[in-house]
Length: 176
Image (tube, rainbow, N blue to C red; front, top):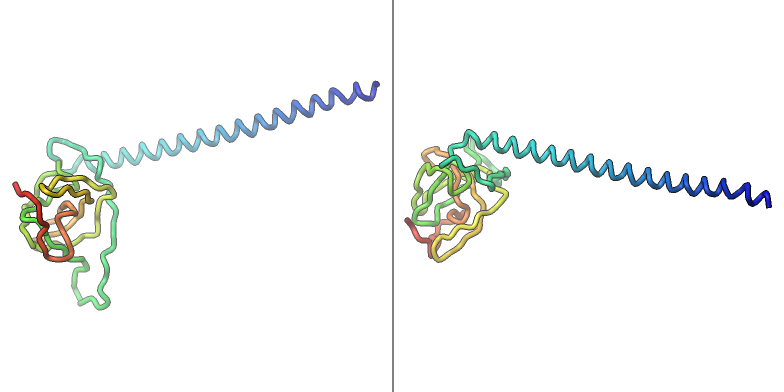
């Protein structure tokens, strides 16, 4: 009987030790997850701060800071043989009777120039990551904003539904 009574405290210590080890593993994993959440939050705050800084000096109407201004760069397709001194950009055409080119990607940015039907634009390789829904009259379009350059050299942003690679008129669009 003394052998069994001597084993009982050892088993209790092993069980308690096992629970302690399991608790420590659980606690470390929770701490690591919390640390990752804090780091992600700090990165998001830094991103938002840099976004606000870059938009603070933008030419906005009424100080409005749009939420849809994340821009991604796209590469325009390159022709096989490029002439010397040629600018590599994709031509686009205005397909609505009147189109406002703006200082930034959104309706609240100032209008730089009013473009006419079939005006040729050069695609500059930037579009917004998000789309915007705009009522054009008989059509409601949801497209991104696209950065372009006019033949006179002005650069600005236009709504993607109002331009195309081919000359044609988008029917059902009301003009101001």
